[in-house]
Structure formats: structure tokens, C-alpha cells
Length: 501
Image 1 (cartoon, rainbow, N blue to C red):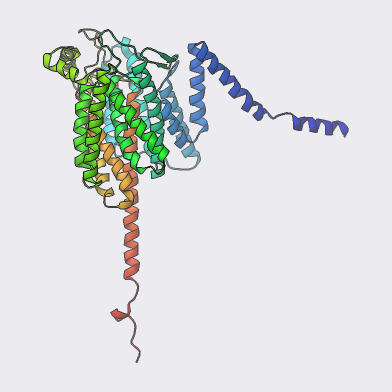
Image 2: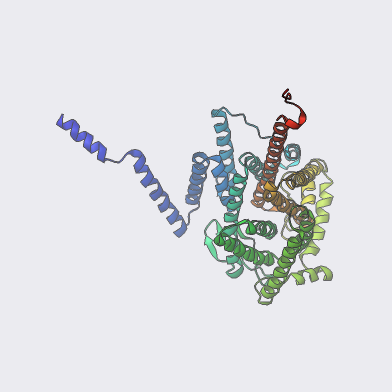
């Protein structure tokens, strides 16, 4: 009896296996991470990233896991079995579907963009017919980017049921934008500095340029310029809706930083598309917001950019945008080679005009003086890679996005309670307008992680539209019921009561 009591006391004092793991696992992972930062080892980084994405995707709720993904997807690591983004989304998608099945819920992922997405998906698959045998691996990786992007879209649409979920995803994007801004600023002022091995390495100054054109986590100047335009719109939308001074200061500071970042990209096409977008914003918001305030805000934004650009370019911090426009007039610079490249890509596209050559362009690198295969036109790139079938699906996709944005704005402006979501739809549609214009002179799919952000925005726009339509319908239904209940109440003046004799 005494021995049994002693064993019971000892067992009570010995920590459980679960408590041991709670201490050992974080300490062990912390030691591995520390060693990977101090003395980088490729496999160690892979193990850490793989463990993180598996833990988040499996253990966290899908609605929270997608928030984490929005942040970490901007900085993917290359694992042995693919990129961390692809692995993360595959695990999250499968775990979400498994949870739906085990909970006895019906899996319904239908959205307004299903048909154009299905068309593009079919075009990608058919394009593999024309892929040379030796290039199958790189084309599969290119297809995985499209697959991952579409999976993000469907997860965002299905995991965003209400306005609260929209706000959560928007703030997750703000956190990601803050990290992206930090890297871009370091690139601009400290070019070539290694921030974290295998993850963040600032761009260096090339021999053709005197300053860095930042690419941040995208490592792509074009992608960062569009990203900056989106968040300049979003910060302007969110700023007046914050109640605390701290959040307003944060958003105003981020707005100023992204003005610098956009100026650093020195993208002629993005500047022209952005200027057109400001005009579109004024027109599109005329029935939703105070037009006078919008016009004043647009003029202030334009003035801030122009003054800021002049100061930064004069100080030698960013490249002068007007000098790049002067290159067009003098027919010098990189655009001369791009003309030759676009002509070459178009001629080769005619070899397989219907289904294209495969998900990834594979022209001989450097067949013109530019050491790049990208034709700097997304529509032409789709024509070459997935043919007219895929290009038609993409145009259908963008037209559908414009239509559903217009539908949501038209419905939402009738209800004062939905004015915030309606204004957000105006921001989305303005960004899509800028995107469609800018893609005539650039190609978003040349980046391996910017497409993931773009399809996240697609999903958020569709989810917001669904919320507006549903809440508007509920409001109308409630109003009809109130009218019916009012009409059914008997009145003395109608003679419904028998008179007293």
C-alpha cells in the first residue's frame, strides 16, 4: 500500500508526455531555426518550412490557416516536393474538405467564375500535348502555380461568409503588405543586403541602372508596382473607417511608404494605368461616395506622388520616371528589344494557335539582347502558352469580375448598411481596371508568387459580392414581412369592426 502511494505521488510529479512535447518541440525547432540563420543549410530550412506549413494547415482552423497563408505566401521556399505555397494549399484544401465531410456538411464550391476558370484549366491541360519531352518538368511547375492560385481563390470564397471574415482577410493583407514594404525599403536604401538566407535577399544595382527598382518578396518590379497600386487604394479606403488614432497613423504611414515603393519601380505602364485608374475611380464611385471628396482625395494623391517622386529622383534614391518616358520618344532602352521579342512570340504562337505550346514559355533564352523570354504582354503570353482557348477563358474571367463588381455596387448602394462593402467593391473594380490595362505591356504570370496574391483578390471580390447580395436580399425580405404585417392589422377606419348598435 505504501509503495502504491509512493508511485502515485511520483507519477503525479512527473510531467505528462504532452507537456514534455510542449517544451521540447519549440526548443528544438528554435535551435534548428537559429542554426539555419547563423549557418544556413538548405535541408534544414526545408524541414522547418515543411513543418510549419503542415502544422498550420492541419492544426489551425481553415479560416485562420488561410489568414496565415496570405502572409507567408508572399515569401515561398522551394521544397523537395514543390514550393511551400503549393504544399500549404494542398494540405489546407484537403483538410478543409475532410472537415466538411466529417461534419456532415455538403461541399459546395460553386462560384460565378467557374466556367471561365474551367476553360482556362482545360486549356492548360490540353497545352501539354505540345510540350517537348525535355521541358515537361518546368511546365508542370508552371501549371502548379495556376492550380495553387485557383485553389486559393476557391478557399477564400468559401471561407469568407460574412463582413467580419472580409475584415480579417483585409487586415491579414495589411500585415503582409507591411512585411513586403519593409523588404522593399531595405532594397531601395540598402541594395544587395542579405536579409535572411534562402528567403530575403535584396536586389542589387544592375550595370544598366544607377538605382534599385524594388521587387521585394515578388522579386519582380512589375508585380510590386501593381501590388502597390492595390494597397494605395485599400489604405485610402480603410483610413476614414478606423476609429482609433493608432490605426489611422499606421495606415497613413503605410500609404506614404507605398508611394515611395511605387515610385521606386519606375514602371511606365503601371503609372499610365494607375492614372487612368484614378479617373475610373472618380466615375465609378459617383453614386457610392461623396464625389467632391473623392476628387479632392485623388488630386491630393496625385500631388503627393509627383512631389515625392521629384524629391526622391533628384536625391538619386529612385529612377526618374520622366527619363524612362523620354527613352520611348528617342527609341532607346529595353522597349526596343521587347518589340522584337513580342514579334517573335506572336509568330511562334501561330504554330499552335488553339491550345498553345504549354504552361511555360520556352523560347531560346537571349534570342534578342534581353536575357528574358517574357514578351511583356500577358495576353500575348497566354496566346503562346495556352492558346486562344486559354486567352479567351482569361478575358471571360476578367469580364465576369467586372460584371459581378458592377452588380454588387448597383445593389449595395441602395442600402446604407452596406455602404462600406460597396465602397470596397469600388476599390476592387478600380484595381481590376488598372490590372487589365497594365497587362497589355506586362505579364503578371512571369512571377512565381504574385499570381497567388492576384487570385486572393479575385476570391475576396467574389466573396464580398456574395455577402452584399445575401444581406441585401435579407433586408428586402425583412422589409416585405414588415409591410405585410402592417397591412394585416385591422383598422377602425376600414370598417373591419362591426358597429355597436
